[in-house]
Length: 245
Image (cartoon, rainbow, N blue to C red; front, side, top):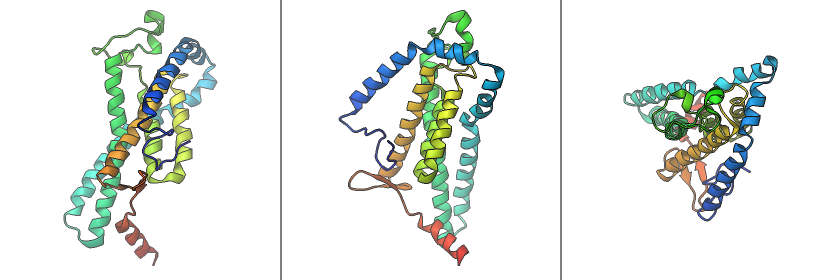
């Protein structure tokens, strides 16, 4: 289903984008019919059932990825100035990896936050007062920033971002990302439609950042057939080979 070297997921190309967008809207419409039942049902589970979801849901917080990657990106860039040769090359490559992680997770998160404020949907916590389809567009606080789910977008984006860098990790990270996304329903913070939309934004946002990097020949390269591949990172490999020698 996911060939990580293709420009877009799920077989998307210029011709299939309109059908993809229509499909997303249809899925959202179908999910909306079950939003209340699934949300209220999951919130009503016994505490012992819900407890694991409260534990894993914080994986979807972006700070634990964005802050370290930003700090490392800055420090590595500064460290490049006194270095020369392969050390400078390797440090620059690692700084670029940190930049990609920061933007690959941060851009989908930013898009999600903009959509949250634009849509202004009430969270499940507001159901008893406002119902499942109440909206305070543009001017709102966290209680009316339910659609799409930021945790879902972040967890999904992380799975793809790290998958682009280390493909063998992708299946595990994707499973974790899906579980984190689903956890947002039983913890009472989002409806299923919010979760689905967050997953879509996180996935497409990660691909978008990777594609921009590839077209600029940063960290990734675009082959003549359109596939996006991770560049060799020769400096880091050379240092690793030195250590093993």
